[in-house]
Image 1 (cartoon, rainbow, N blue to C red):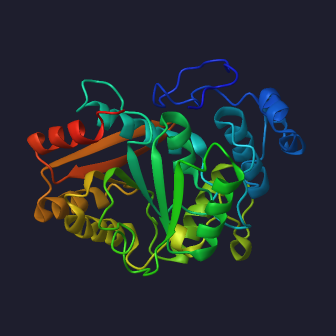
Image 2: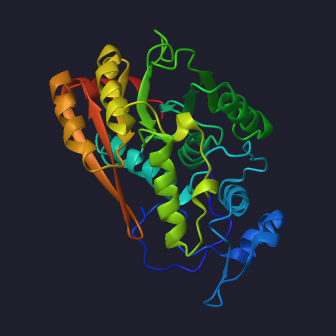
Length: 324
């Protein structure tokens, strides 16, 4: 499992206690681990070393440096204009999911490849499987509807020997489906996770990007909006937006109720939350949890649900985690 190579100066943080990214970015150490980051680092107006977070190339190189420094990932790249997610927040989701499993395991987080996780919408970046496998040794299957994303994620896995036995990538051949066609009859997953497309249209995604760039103090040309974290259509928006996607996920999950312990999804918009919770109740979920996460001034959350009662959960644990 991955350990931090260096201990960065600590500061107060609202990230999860096990998150390796709780402290400020130590750019000298990151540049030492990943020299390609060096051209993008310069003093900010406060005299601290930083990067231009409105520059997609700088953001991508920072991710590459973080993955190399903290998770021992020596090859990582994504095609141009594909989603390049901020790693600290992604790591939080993984660590809170680990807590979810520990609650039914006497406070002990089950580790190793006996724990199997499905990432819906793995993307070209493969971030969640990388963090989850390197942090806890879990075995991941990542699915995506975009062939280019599948190819990129698969290449990352194959290029890093410490990922090969722990991550498998699958193409979702029917874009209108979420679990159907990905979960096979013999599959059993302890967790599913998802970072759904949040927006209902390209215009909505660009409006959000424009807002972010203005907060970074950048002049915005509305005709040439550049998303600093990138993103393709299927990564950022879909017909019906987030609420349609997560409610479809809830409905489809009923078909795999006995093949998965905990389903989960990020929920970006507060207005989506009551609709999803109502849908899950109608679908017969036995237990539903809303878990809040905070990164700086940004508050996010994910919803987890299961169709297994307490007795069934214990049978699941005893059957699957005895060798963990």
